[in-house]
Image 1 (cartoon, helix red, strand yellow):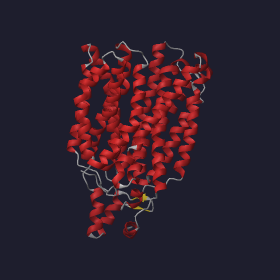
Image 2: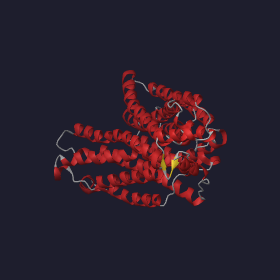
Image 3: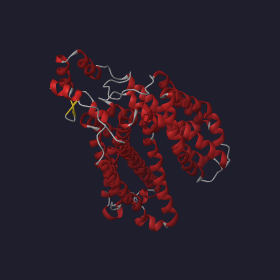
Image 4: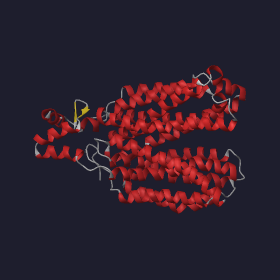
Length: 464
């Protein structure tokens, strides 16, 4: 066993060409785009048609609740997927997991489009819908984490922030694609056509994206960092007891390298990452979920104004995300994190004043500013910083769990709390206060975190 480890350590560094890097970047972007497109397709369908075609024997209100509940079960499955595939990715490699997750997401989404309705098979129809939603979420729970890890581990050190930010661009692409598909259907089809067959088209068309993504990933090479890990032998990470046996007979240098990865007390890096994630996800839940309904319900503007503002904000994100990635490469992750979170705190009340002004341009400007500074900008930094915080032996698992737990807590609590506080106070100021609170969590986490720019990602131990 010791000889195998020494041989693995003496293997020349894994080399990757520009073509390999391009393929990894496209793979990461496609997977994230597909994840967000799948979830957005489903959320829109749940709100528009699923209550009528899968839950027709109940009142419209109960049907909508049931449809949204099937949307929510996907988030439970995401956490299970993060644990299962995170461990697999750390032990067997990133490539294998990314191949499986894209198949799970793509196949389940396509099959939703082929489901019989309640009118055809009765109660079995919503049961099958929930099953496919669980499968979809199970794959999605590790997709964005896997893509983030793969791109960070592929990227040249000097451009790691920029290249890793491409994962964040996938969120914009998927959301815009799903929203665009549904906008076209709603514009050109009658309600009868939409309910009879039109709702199936977005799900069935996602099959084409899955085929392309699978083709890209089939020829994707394994992460060079995974191949260079000192605890990986013949493509499989050694178990803890195997590493301990090697340490007992190894020389001082080799033993210290391995011991650093398995004997370090874990937890601090995870909670720092959770704090970074909590602020970004909390702001996202307020800006992209709660405010859309709040504006349409409480302000004297057209009902399409908030959704149009999200579209414009997402389009602006195609410039914001790579710019923030470049700034992180130039000035460090920590400095840019502190600047963005502090700016969100300072702008929280001015942004909400713009949004609640009743002026369409004011709503647009406020939403675009809030979305790009407090959500997309932080997401761009998150993509690289969280990967750099964790050691290579547990990077996939810890990153996936911190993303999913932070996201579930923040997005589950945020909109409900915001709705309660705005109803009790009959005012918008609690929304601004929550934006400040979430951003301060990120600010404090960034302040306590070490600077990770340029860190050697092959190291087995966490950054703290």
